[in-house]
Length: 252
Image 1 (cartoon, rainbow, N blue to C red):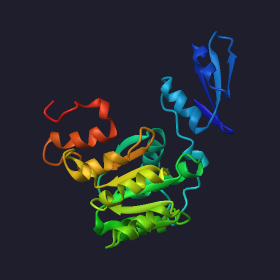
Image 2 (image 1 turned 90 degrees about the vertical axis):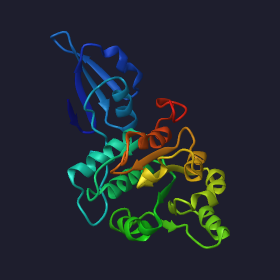
Image 3 (image 1 turned 60 degrees about the vertical axis):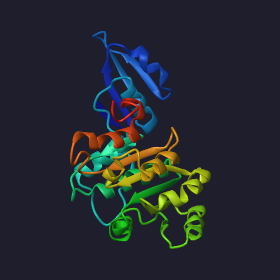
């Protein structure tokens, strides 16, 4: 496989299945095989992955400038690339691996593509400013951000209704503004930091998050301990990311 001038080329014996990709070309080789050339775009690479082509790199590697003060490490690029391919997914990297900036770069890339209009970040109150606002300032500083936290619920709602691209909310604060988030309709991405707080689907916190998710909503759950106490801890998280892939009820 090669990528030259934004075109992916690879060999195949079954060229017909790639005809569904508009920006593609097939040429027959002398040995009876075929060379397929496909535009290196995110939509095209998603289709190629669905067709079973392995090791297709995300265009974020070559079409994104990775803004900010720091040069991303390779594992951060791989995390961001993974997220561009997976609408609902987990980031299970250990603490200290820079996963916050990885998801911010991935979100920014998808915002530039107009796939995401607004991003809602759910995290503990203690790291809203110290982690998230700080890392936004070190990476995607060109994006507008607000912390939607205020003693008065009306003020939180007012912040939601404005046009900030990234809105940061604490876990329990979401229940106060869930209706406004749903009515806004522009939160295409929800990022949950330290997502183990959503391990129990019986809690109001879990139900508030589930209520704002549409089938097309991007959902990225971040945690280094998805099953801290027992494998059963992962049930509530898996039910958010892939509800059809787990039993309907916990006892199952």
